[in-house]
Image 1: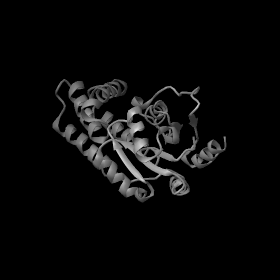
Image 2 (image 1 turned 180 degrees about the vertical axis):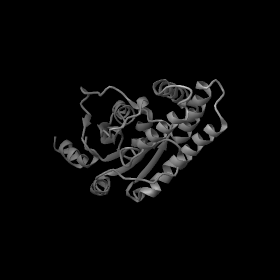
Image 3 (image 1 turned 45 degrees about the horizontal axis):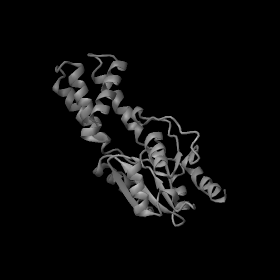
Image 4 (image 1 turned 30 degrees about the vertical axis):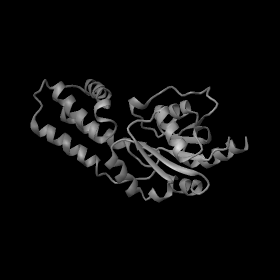
Length: 233
């Protein structure tokens, strides 16, 4: 079936995002250096994030709360108030960081717009994702925007039925193997992996190398050529 709908991830597919989490986590490690070592703290924080996804969802606010929870845990409740204050300040800085588009993004979207239905499919905090999209200048390029709490096969099935001709005629591209590739493949769409270089541990998954609709490209700018090749096949 001809591809008529293109779904695009936002964070670390259209603009930088994960590097701000890395910077904040490095600062978090410095703040707790008197209480525990880097590796132990990183493991405890990741465990908190995994445990809290069901409570806070994805995004900066949940990350901030997980840092606070971890700080309380590793200090046996003795974490100083000024450290909590600095964790909150770091999270607020993340919520106001400027948008920096990845190379080739604007040209790629210009090439695809008008030829396909473009749908931005992102997860995380609603206000933060809306802020980033507005600052990116890309909002008018998309036929639809879906900010979801999680990216699952049923969610993709619903989105591609709502904004296109169903999952069979849709392609999803993004930097998360779990959310942007495996889940849309399970829904019946194409899944295109666009590596960013910084990967959150909770988004990792084994590449579905044997799946006929799985593809991998080096950068988003390679997507138009990939789609053209699929159309000729």
